[in-house]
Image (cartoon, rainbow, N blue to C red; front, side):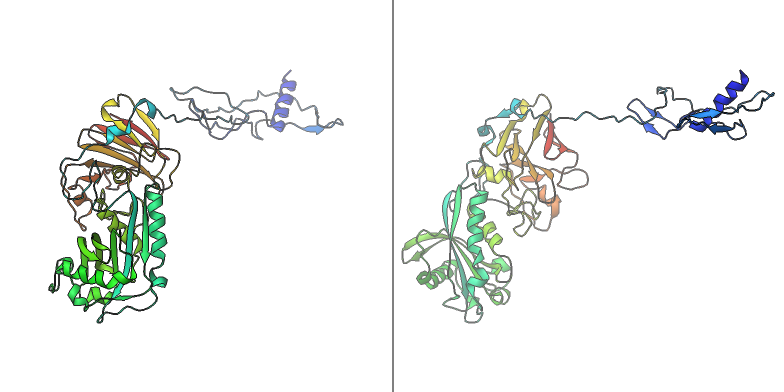
Length: 455
């Protein structure tokens, strides 16, 4: 019998079945660590085996009788951890598939009519539309008539083709207005193909308070009257809402040209009111179409320069930034964004975790483009999913009756003195990677436009 045992042991050695060597295998119940090899070495058992004539079988040859008792070496096996279960060694690592986690929006359990979030502004200065209703110096709905004028002077002359330099402005303004207002507003633009000479030299149309230099030689009203007189033969000024004036660089840099404001002037079609903007850096050599949009929107009642002044998430924050969007709150106040774009939540209704997936203002889809969470009759939180620098969640606080504070060099410390500002995590970034809280409401980013909101 001892001979038979030795033969069997030899067969096990040749077939590699004395033990199974495995690599680290992770299980949901724990980790099985490496087990030391327990196969006998050449010094343990000597067995001679010859192949049989039947393919695939091995026929043992009588081995010499070993009188001495075979002594196995001690085998050290790692003990399983107390909190783990020792599992039998598998021949192959099992494939464990984690169940897919589904995301289910429960927004409908919390949503309020959009009218709930249209909080009324009671502390209003001019055309600063921080809340409802929206009031502008020029229309923000329907057709808005725009005249873009290339004007030069005897001592600061223009050069080159106006249509070649500025002709693209017409198409840019018109397409932008229809897109971002959802068709509720359209700019109609006139551009005369040629430089129009002003009646006087550039120094007569300066704006010392705009540039911080120079001495005013005549009033704004006189300047506008002369400009209207010069351009009237080339434009149909009837119904014009906004006049934008482009001048050669020399008129800005040496003579401090500037005209700005909502003013009345007489035309061949009668006396009417114009919003005007010219100078102040408005000159050939810079991108003008997006700058004109920024300035026209101011006259239409958009405050801009927030909730983060100078950041690249919208044309009213940085006209030369990567996004030409109108943010959710100002678009909502202007009634460009409505019940199909804005989801309204009353914070007092958040009695459980709210889950929602947002579309993006930057691409417009079937989902809501953002959330407005009403905190009280003066304050809301606005949440946007943006795709400017990647997929990002932004949130900002709005107090419609708080004062306006603008400091173009102040960074986000200055922003937080304003009536609206971004909520930031500890790193100071406006992008929410984890969560932010304000007014008892916590907004948590779950990724890919998905949010968890709690109170």
